[in-house]
Picture 1: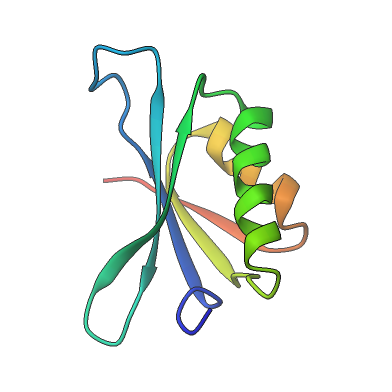
Picture 2 (picture 1 turned 30 degrees about the horizontal axis):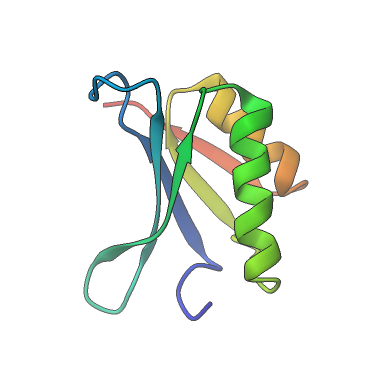
Length: 95
């Protein structure tokens, strides 16, 4: 709650495991670095599934409302973020 309301990062480990699960990391900046604040272990990478996971985290932490969310260029991640946090800006970071 102290750090996640300005910037939150979401990143997935695409196709890095031999299991049929997708791992999403939710990271927030602290006063000295970024930390993983939550992990989503999902059965698929659909926007609705990611949104369900984000809603569960928001339910556990009701005051969490980031001003912006950084993501890789994944339309499903961006759609999930914009679905859960209506009105915020989701940025796709292209390297």
